[in-house]
Length: 447
Image 1 (cartoon, rainbow, N blue to C red):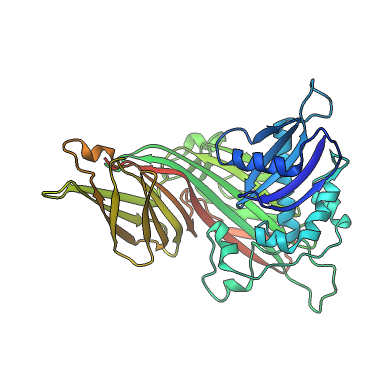
Image 2: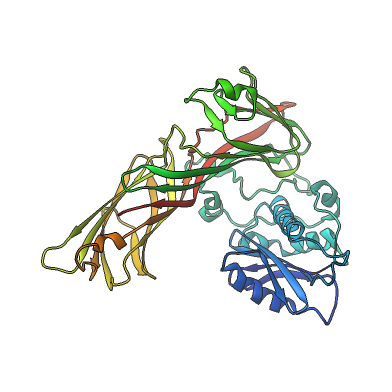
């Protein structure tokens, strides 16, 4: 049985919450928030016990979603597993995105009444009722208030508007439901297809990749008045490893090691097809999740080289780091952060950059080098002087590794792409396809 459902900032400031039952034995919501905020800063199970209560939480878009219940006493029938509670919070987050258009702090703050209506309908007296969009739509009466357009809203996926034409429509801020208010003109529907990939890799000093893992998602988001069939054409050289065509694949083919298709997806993998057909539900759904464990033909999106040299008659070392973006033409890397480990004896760092608007500072034995933007097929260089780093032979060994964080828009490392996007019936609509590559754990060894 659940007692509280709420949303807070990552620092523990309460944005909105709702209490479903009163029980003096269960802690106050503020106590759950304090415990969850502290626990979220560390790794482990997204669950924390507070007195006679238990709090489940997830962190999405720098916000904490909390679901609080009484503690499991003797395996009562009302108790749910952690997996069920976390899945419910994920659905709650998706509902907010569907109804409000965005689940950012600004979007939720502008739509507190609408969010409160959602919270009132999905739980009743502490029990889960429904998280199905179609069932909730007739019960929600508040109209969404869209926050002012800003680059920050689109940058959550690394998709900043590049042209005047792209600024006319924002995929991240439009609700999936049209307004109930009368309009002078009927609004055109919109369909958004996102391919989002996260890379985990370890690259040795000589450039060889010791391990590699790419997790990708093919996401569909529909803002249409009625259900339609959506047909997506994928790469003609796409091979799913557990299908018959995998035996005849070539090294130039795009082969997925494992994949999961949404239950509503029909996939045709004949030579002439390679299509995904789905009856588009309302809201956002993951059509396919996939895993690749071999470095794709496109290679890695970034190359890092480092040169460590000693300074004559000094205990300092020079570290020259060169970062090159290998994204496809037209792509751009945003919010790049490089964490470079240095020896504990380093007392200060002097820096010099090849491009403006870059910063670097020494924090907890790491140089945190921040690069706001880097275009594809370009590179940037930073020179660091590590004070008191040279203490004879072996001093260079303690420098590195370099961990890289980034968002690379309009780039798909695996090479997966959308050949066409069709609707049946062919309704007038705007159709958008976006590619994003981000880092999960990309580490370069420097010494």
